[in-house]
Structure formats: C-alpha cells, structure tokens
Length: 154
Length: 280
Length: 131
Ligand SMILES: C[S@@+](CC[C@H](N)C(=O)[O-])C[C@H]1O[C@@H](n2cnc3c(N)ncnc32)[C@H](O)[C@@H]1O
Image 1: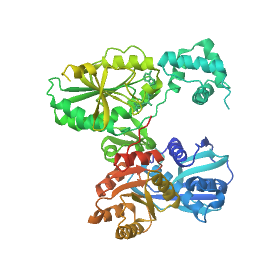
Image 2: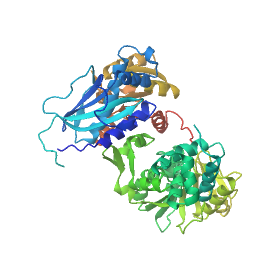
Image 3: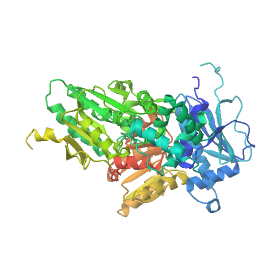
Image 4: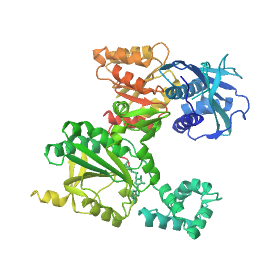
C-alpha cells in the first residue's frame, strides 16, 4: 500500500508532543540545515507497513528533553535519563506516525544511539521529513520506508 | 513587553463590547497584545498598535470581525464538568420521552458551541435513548466565532482534543481516524446544525427548545447583557424547558424569573412561570 | 488511594506519577507488565490494592495488553480501574484494549488536564468545576 504521510502530519504530531511535555512549541524549519545530529533515537514499524521513524537532535537538545520530561535540572539527571526521555519521545512520535500509515503494524521499543548514526538501510527511502527549531537548536524527524518496491504514485 | 498604546487598547475594547458584548477590563492589554499579534503579523504590520491604528482609519469590517474572533475564549471539552450531561441524558431527556408528546422531536440548543464538543457530547449521550423511544432530535449549535463554527461543522479534532474528557468507548463508537485527527461520524453530524448567532443581538426566528445549554459564556458579559440574554433565552424555551449554565454562572441576582433545581447534582434552571403554572 | 503506573520509560512514569499525586493518589511504579503483576500481588498482600493502574502498551517482558488480560483473570483485582496510556492510537487498537478489559484509554501525548478529566469521568476524583 502507498504510504500517505505528509510533512504537516509530522509537524502536527511534534506540535502536540512539544506543547504537552516540553513547555514551548517548536517552529518549523528546513531539513538539512542543522549541524550533524549527535543523538539519534529510532523506533521501527513492522507489519502492513515497514519502516523506521527517527528523531535526531543535538546533545544539548537531548539533555533539554530529559530535563523537561523529568522536571530536573540537567545536573540532577541520572545516567540513562536522557536516553530514556529521548526514547519516549521517539516512541510517541512513532506510535502517532504508525496510526496515520496503513495498518495493522506493530511498533518496536525505542533505540537511542550517540554519535552520527546511520539509521537507513539498503532499499530504504525517505517518506517524509520535518525539521523543527526548538530553543535555538535543530531537531529532525525522518520517516524511512523499507518497502520501496512500489512507485511513489498515489 | 506590553507596548500596546492606550488608544489602541481602548478602541479594541469598544469594538469587542459593541460587536459581542465581551467586557475586556483594563489590565487585559497583555491578552489583546497576545491574541492580535498573529493578525498584525498576517497584515504585515510591525506591531499590534500600528495594526489597530490602521483599522481605526480604514474600519475594514473583515479585519474587525477577525479581531472579535481572536478575542473570544474558545476553551471547551467533551462532557465538561460531567454532571450537566448526566442530568440531560439520564433525567431530563428520559422525562421528556415519557411525556408522550405527539411531535416526537427533541430540540436542543448549544448556545455558545465553540468548536462543537458540547453539541456532539449531547448527541452522543442521548442518541440511543431517543431512537429507542421512536423519537428524533435536532441540535442547534451557535457561536459568534466563524473560525469555531467551521471547526465544529467539520467535526475534526486533534488527538489532544479527543483526549480531553471523551470516554474511549464513545471515541471508538462515533469517530474515525483521518490522518492525525479524528472525525465525528456523519450519522452524528446529521442531527446537528451549526450557525452564527450573536447572543448580544436580537435572536433570529428559532424553534422552541426543550433544553438550552448556555455554558461558560455569560462570564464574559456585564450584568445588563447577562440579564438581556437570559430574558431572551427564556423566550426560546418550551414551557417547562431547561436551561443549563456553566459551573461559575448563575441567574441569581441577574434575572430572578428562573427557578433553580438540582437534577442529579447539576443545577438546572426553568422559567419560574412554568413551575408556577403547575401550582408549585 | 493507591495507583500503579506501568511504563517502561522512567520519564513517563515521572510525568504520570506527578499528575496522580496532584490528584491525591499514592503512587507505585512498575517498568513492565510482569513487574506490575508482582507489584500488585505485593501491594494486595499488604492490604493496599491499587484502585487504578495506568498502563503503557509497548513494554519489554510483558506488554500492557497482556497485563490487562492477566488482571482480568484474577478475581481479587476485579475492582481495579485500568486505563491504557499509550502512543498506540489506531481505532482498532483502542477497540482491542477495551475488549480486553481496559476501562479507559488515553493517547500519548496527553496533558495533565486530560488525565484529570478521565479520572473524573471514571468517578475516581470529583470533577473540578472549570470557568
Ligand atoms: C469558553 S467557550 C464555551 C464553550 C462551551 N459552551 C463550553 O462550556 O465548553 C465560550 C464561547 O462563547 C462564544 N461567544 C463569546 N461571545 C459571544 C457572543 N456575544 N455571542 C455568541 N457567542 C459568543 C465564544 O466564541 C466561545 O466559543
């Protein structure tokens, strides 16, 4: 089935997520303009639709997400807290993305990687990508499809 | 950073009072600034004061309507405060259905319907009962804000909005997913009409209602406006019809021609004459 | 009133825990369905059975749907209110969770008001009158 996921869908999901947990709304930005991401969180979707949802952010933003979710100063975060918070972030984005795509499919547990990770695998193509600006930092949400057998018709 | 000029603020205050009877107390400059900033920006003006100054000269009615729209507070949710909707579904409506009235049509007015949650809540909670009794129902939702009316008619709500007080069994029964949003079923929409109505102006010709919900809107008006609205609402009610107000609203000391009774914990108002006529 | 928050994310448990404490609950936490079942048994043995469980869906070891079905098999937990709080948001999944025994369902992301509204709906806290 052809995926129908628009950049606006990603922005709507991110907008709800940010207003709910992160205190201030992000503004839309342009993909690819930021520095290379330092933290990459992903969940995969498998079933009627197969692919990966990736949130990439700077180390500072990852820490801001941890502080905001746990309502702790950065200095008081325990090891693992930042990964946990960023993992929950991508889990929420992933679940919402999955519900817009053809189903039924299931969602994996989140994986958080540090350094400039390469998430995409062979045969994967970008279905939708949104960029946000939050607290002066760049955040990207990318949805990769691994079912590239069908054309991009609609 | 309140840079809003006093002249601009006063002009906006007068405008929203004249057009919608909404009272903006001095000190609400921050509110006007925040709500009008997007309009000023869209009009390419550097500040709200400059934007308002331009309108004081041009008097563009479309922009003025947008200002009024922007200064309405549209906060709402499903089953807001719970009890009033239980009173309607479990007591008021069943009593009317038992009355054996020949017309078999229930008419309900959501008189400040905002984005529609109140009207759809009533529809969801009475639909099965009304049908089972062989009746039908018509709900009229009205508001002054065109933006809210458009949204109410579309019946599409974000995930965050459906999370606010809508019981999950009703979500799956009456809504389908449309992208990131949820849309009310055509079946439910079929019994509801949304149209623009300014509560502060004379009402158009309307049917007589069994139930009027006038919730969380009187709080924005002064006493004279409240009284005038309550009097005119009384005129739209059937004999023995019910008025439901918001949790912080009352007819007491505003318009004494109402009797207040508690129905399942919710205050319900009836025109005093209709109770009087029954000899109470 | 005891509540059990079941989610594999500490951040999410913290967010939910804070909301529940604000609503007058005493909160315990579990990181997956199995831990939650163990925790229920321990609390039950102490005579402190929760009145409410907030249950995530996707978790390691035992997921939330399985947990809800397990709780449904146990007579002593009949009175616990089960509320799914998850990012799973397809129509069909909500239907599945309700059929499995969930009483309510909140989709992530949620606001504190959304949880409070649902608790009022379930009669677990009294409805706050909003102006
Ligand atoms: C806070 S909302 C209440 C919505 C709903 N009744 C409830 O209780 O949740 C108030 C609504 O009243 C509308 N309103 C304000 N002034 C009005 C007027 N003069 N005539 C009609 N509607 C008005 C606003 O546009 C807004 O949608």
